[in-house]
Amino acid sequence: GFEIDWKMAKVPIPHHSQVSLLLRVKAVSVNPSNFKHPMVFTAWPFLRHIRDWPVGYDVSGVVLSVGTSSSCDVKVGDHVWGMSLGVAGEYAVVPCAWVAPIPGKLTHAEAAGLGVAGLTSMQAYERNSVQKGQQVLVIGASGGCGQFGVGLAGAIGANVTGVCGTQNTDFVRGLYPGVSVVDYKSKTEMDALVEKKQSFDVIYDTVSSSAPEDPNYEPTLRPVLKPDGTYITIGPCPDVLDQIRGFLDVLTRFFQLRVQRPGYDWFLLAPSKALMKRLNGFFDSGALTSVAIDSVYDLTQSEDMIQLAIKRMKSRRAVGKIILTFGNDTSISG
Image (cartoon, rainbow, N blue to C red):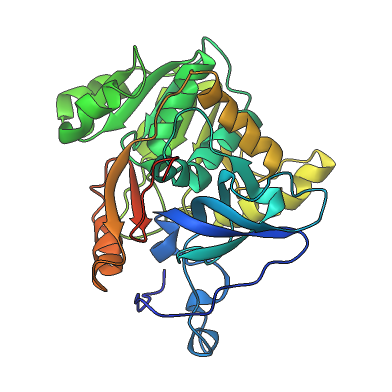
């Protein structure tokens, strides 16, 4: 990805349209893509110098004003979570189509973590029809997407194995009852996992990518996948041909055509209100009760806070979600 000059800046309060709403932001979640491959204009040559582009796309807050479109099914004062571009500020405009009520007993900080990580994991499992009783292996189980990969698979009724580092094994065991854990730093445990040939119906790899600092787990762990299983990956593909096929697949799936190699699935997140409500359902029903938070950075305390948050994300040591706040209470009553 490109290196971005992250900094704090004062910008005007944005205006919303008939199909969007204005939020008083309570919390924003940081994602690896904020620095691996920043969305749209933020890192493009020339364009990045035209103006300051706010970052972030996972947000929670209180509705201040709502558009008149039929898609705007919330009202002023509602506590909601959603997705948009450039939400890391005290106020943010969010499309009504990408907003949902905060589910269950989640705080704003937890709800801000639902966006990319939660919806990506939901979409990964739905498009590959993960079912009760299946064997699911989650690589990077202690990270943002990883925690949802473990929790959602467990809530669906699958048998889940999570791969993580030594320091995070207890955390992953606590994500959902009955989860098996493999310490990737233990040669003995990894050798035992590799020996389980053709054991898993789904491998959800939240770690491998084309970034030079990221490992590629597929050559090592592909043999533990069943012949009719699926290896799901969400980072930029290590193999450029897989990346090209993945982009083409976004178009060809509309015509029921798969162009990705057999047993391999890479996709682009396609947020929707329906997907958000299905994710909400796991929390409203009590199947899932919380979102793990690694750390919270109040950006009103110091201009260094955004740098510290990105540094924490780049460290690859985050356990759960990294959250930005703006000097406010993140409880639902706050």
